[in-house]
Structure formats: structure tokens, C-alpha cells
Length: 379
Image (cartoon, rainbow, N blue to C red; front, side, top):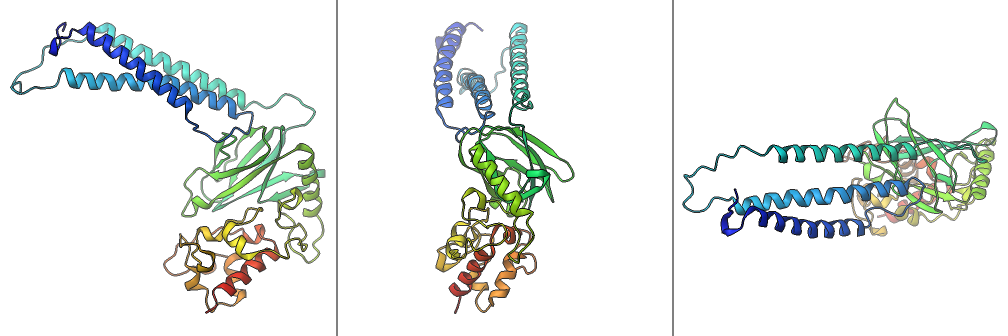
């Protein structure tokens, strides 16, 4: 075993592999740590999780490099050469020391990493110590293909909204539910995610640290409309969030005055969504803008699934509106939006379009969209 082909002995080969492996590992670790794998951190849980990821990168790169080097060198040094087709290899009986080492070291490394990961997950999932501001609970409901959020408002009254609002610096416990199939509630900026399972309540807690709007996505393939099951988590200063929740509690539990439901989410935070109680806040709603961009109350942009020449949108999973809407009166267009399963276009799948547009669009916004679609598809 001392002599290697090409005149190099085993010691030379090992030193050469070690030097190359060290250089490649350091370069790989530097690259792995330099890449921005994740979005900005927006919770106290995000930092420890990102550090755990960095540790896994540091440990994984040298192992990958070592395996690749051994395979490449083995192929180069011990490959079959012309004229050796009938030869058999030398009778090697193995090396007990090497076998012990390559079994023990990975086992020890795995145990250490598993313990470290367990400690991190245990620490970030702990309930916060008693504080002046108690932990807030939010019930999250997933359904094809929308999210709904329920808060305990003032005096124990419930507030239900399709827009997620959270206070900065306050621990929030999410209890996650599913109304139909398995979904996965994930806010990438918070780093935490968990499945929403029918018949089972799952959950986790986060403490938002950064003000702003952060995407909420479903991370579990849940049907044809899975890609459009998106929402936004808006983190507000504590005082502004309390004012929003107080306003939503009052409006959600106010007697109906002929204007529609008050259980929406954006109005109290200064957004352009539905005003609880059905006021005229969005009377001048832009139907084309809602069709192409959605609204701040969680309405998915219609143009992400439907083709419409006037809006410049291309056909997706939904029908081409330039083909199916001409000749339809506004009442039928309205019915197709608020109850999309009542009538499915030929050749298109059912169970894709979110059924919550009647909740996430105010009466004025819904009327604006219907008017826009009717006018833009006239023949």
C-alpha cells in the first residue's frame, strides 16, 4: 500500500488531500456564511435559528469536501488502466482503526448537533417570563386558499380578521388550525413554521422585533391554489396595535347598520381595507388596481390567476376573463366572485379560487371590481 501509481506514496497523497481539503473547506464555509439564505430577521427567534444554520454549514462543508476528495482521489489512483482488465485487486482486509474513527466521529458529531438543535428549539419555544405585558394569543385558521386570524379583544370579545396584525416586542402564541386539508403556517422573517392539521391544534410563539409588513405563506402543498395562499403580517408599535384592536373590537361587535360585516382587519391600522360596519371608506375604490394588485385587507390579486387584456394579465390557473365574462350581467360576475364554487368554467379545476373575497373586499371594493370587469369585457 505504500507505493501509489505515479510514484507517490500514501503519506504524500494524504498530505496533498489534507491541504486541498482544508483550502476547499475554508472557501466553502466562507461562501456558505456569506450567502444571504434567509430574509431579514424580524423576531427574537430568528437570531438563534440563523446561528444554528451557520453552525450546520460550518460542520457540513468539510464533510462534503472530504467525501468528494476521497471519491475523486480513489477514482484517479485506483482506476483500471489499459491492459489490467483481467487483473484482480490486492487482497485488502481493511483497517480497524480507520473504521472505528469514521464510525465514531460522525456519531459524536451528530449527537452534538442534535443536542445543540434541541437546546435552541427548547429555548425559543419557552413561554416568556412574567412581564408587564402578558403574552397574546392568536388563533390561525387555514383553508383552501386563505388565512383567517382570531383575536381576543377587549372584554373577551372576539375579533376575526383576514389580515394579521401583531404588536412589536410582545410575545404572541399562535394556535394553528385547519378547516380542510393540511396547510403550513409560515412567516419567513420570523423563521418559525408549523403544519395546520385538520382536527389537531398545533402552535408556536414568536416575539416580533421589527416594524413592517412580512409575507405569510403556506409551506405545505395544499391544492391547485397553494401558490396563491399568501397573506401579510403587519407589525405595529404596541400603542398603535392596542388602538387597532380596541377599534376592531368595538366595530366587530357593533350592531349591523345595513352596511355589511365588521370583522376585517385593515381599517384600524390606517390601511385602505374594508371599514368595519360597511362605511364609505372605499367608495372610490379602483377596481383595476384591486384586480391587478389586490388590497391591503388580504384580497389576492385576480390578475395572478386570470387573463384580462385591459389589465395586461396573462392566463394562469383561472379562466380567461376576456372569453368568459362578455355578456354576463354584473350580478353574475358578483356571484362568481363571492361564491366561486357555484359555477366552474369548462376545462378549469374547482376548489382553487379563495372563497373569502366577500370578507376581504368591502362592498365598495367589490362593486368597483365588478364594474371594472363588466366594463372592460364589453364586446
